[in-house]
Length: 131
Ligand code: HEM
Image (cartoon, rainbow, N blue to C red; front, side):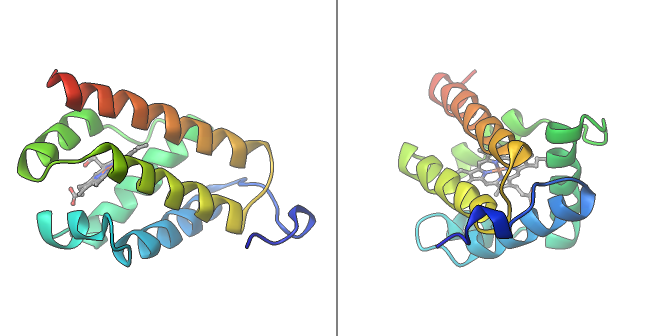
């Protein structure tokens, strides 16, 4: 259960992003539905992947310009290796939103959840249409 919102503050800086991303992937790795993408389909090198994800989310929220990857292409490849179904996306989003809500409350916390949902929608469409 999230704490009452008056005990949580908003996402305001890089340190908050790092905390969010670390706790999100702890939940992802332990998850029965999507954990295997990260532990078996891809043997993720976390020392490399986490800083990429800090930069990605920092750029989404604060427009820092520090991310220059191609997530759509990466997930199309991944989908060819191991199919990513709508239920996987739903669980990914559920874990993301519940991690945000457990740690933070405020305008940026709402924005980052919305951005995650809209990027996930585009990603699913791209995968579906093999664009
Ligand atoms: C069920 C859904 C998803 C699965 C299973 C999944 C899985 C993965 C995996 C295995 C990687 C590769 C890590 C590596 O290269 O070592 C990755 C990278 C990444 N994912 Fe996802 N992902 C999902 C959804 C999403 C969503 C919805 C977003 C954004 C809102 C996202 C953002 C990223 C980004 C930014 C990268 C890094 C790409 C790069 O190397 O530049 N993922 N994902």
